[in-house]
Length: 182
Image 1 (cartoon, helix red, strand yellow):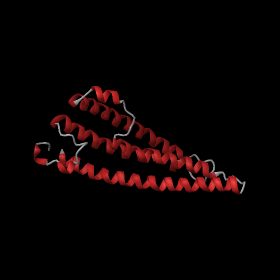
Image 2 (cartoon, helix red, strand yellow):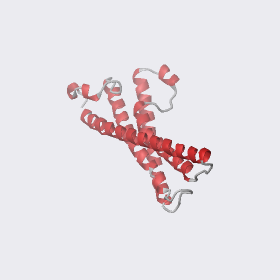
Image 3 (cartoon, helix red, strand yellow):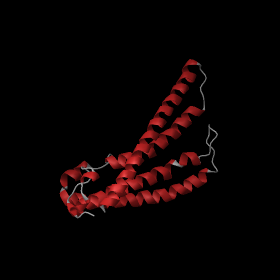
Image 4 (tube, helix red, strand yellow):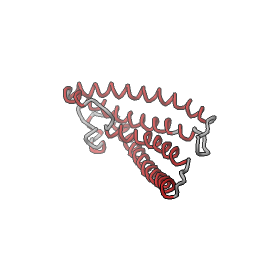
């Protein structure tokens, strides 16, 4: 089990790096596009039609590329009061149940998103010459990256439930495989 977690952790380190790079590029492009729109609207008094829609599409992509980062960091919306009330194995068990529900929900959304991508081939964007498929692709890509992260978090929680070793606070590389956690 520890070898699987170590491999998944390395894979997800790459996923997080990739998502962060996409986020950086998208935020930079959005800033440039918005500045172009401001310049044309207020300096040249000639508003462009494409920047708003383009920036909106980039914002949607940013949301789905940030989801894996937020999931792994535990930055998603949660009820802190539950964490304060439950301690130890009971909290870990509740966390596992929530993670399983999250993986199931993400899987259902992934399946539905494939239909959206397919239908998007027949829909043109309003102000830019692209098919909506390219916008909708952020759903299956972001959801699949998030589910891989969720599996890593789930496996670490299962190890914590069984052994008491909290892999969320320690790096996986520090935990020896010989501890009987394999």
